[in-house]
Length: 291
Length: 239
Image (tube, rainbow over all chains, first blue to last red; front, top):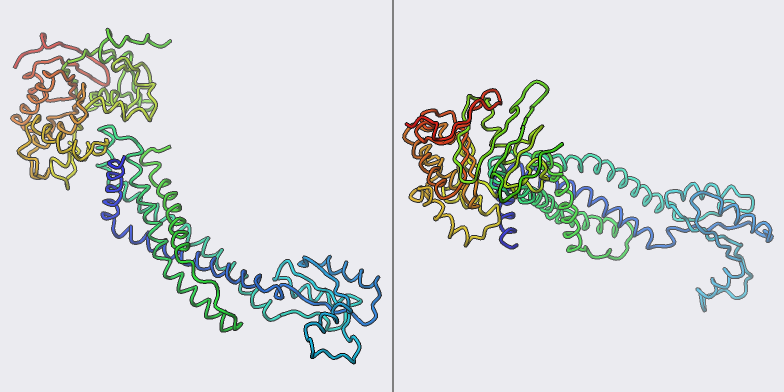
């Protein structure tokens, strides 16, 4: 078994050495593709996680006019729930809000004055992207105080724009770079098959199985993809650092979660290797008559 | 209706039964071939280029499949073999291709070793068996040479040596003297006869009339894909 593995690996690496430039092209393109697509996916994930980690960023407050009765409150809550982008609507009675306000202030709470707070609705958004539209719809409602919709509009806008941009960029790069990488690995393996036509013929003449003949090419594709993943990791770390500095600069928050280096290396190498395996199988299938 | 299955013990080693190979609507490689070969035979397939000599050999190694009729080898009908069984069929025979098919960047011993390694031989087995094989085909003294440093006859010996790695009972040689001078051709034929004397069935596709006459073995002559004569060595004209 070890003996067979040694032969297959030596064949695969001999082929990698022989086609140095094709291998170089396939590896670097894989690295660029994995870095860009992986980097964007990672940034998207971090921004999204950041948005979700701060519940207030997914919420808005809708203050009602003075003296709205129970029927008006119910009607407003129902209308808010019907707006696209709204997940949950909770009524916050003015008495409870005042109680909470006093509790939060403690000794500093003004005792002598009456409750100045209106009834309000806590609206949790299902989609950050729709916060502006929700705010506009909510402010049109009959019992809502003019200017009574409060939310972190600038941050919502920034985060949602960032996510949208990342989504578009990611899709664009995925659609262009992933097939390009696949084609390069495919060409590299086809080239290797052609370069090793004599070896293949000899193996076929003496009765080597299809697996013995094909596996070195599959290993070659895997290695190209995996090396691409390995090379993409430092670049991805740079993106992480840049993202961390940007977020800290913008929102003065604490340091984001540490960079999961091992997980990223393993993940990118695994994705690269799987993709390389698929492309090399497609490339070797016809010339080697694999099923 | 198919032909009756030959009994492995009593039937001939190789049987071509009404074999036809049609390459396309108009071109036939072989037509109505009926031929029986016994274990230990030495048979020449002769004829002009395109007569069907190589196709007859390739039917046995399943590089070509018959479009009609049946080919039997050691009691097995080769046309019914599954693709995944073909490598195992080829391990029962040694194939010497027309162009030697040697690896130019590997030394003589490495060429044989490579084929053995492809079949799963360990390094120890390779170290033990390769010198033995090279001695058997009288090329041991050039073990460390590269193919381009060898004469055509020596390259052919290496190709024959590589074909022997599985200790085959059948050797298929396609134009083994095609690119050799008279002296080298005769040396190769002597080598093939030695292997035959040790029990290996040898089938040779050739158009080298001089060598065929000198060797004086069974000769099957083909013309346009059909057998036009089948002479045993007794009938053949000695050199």
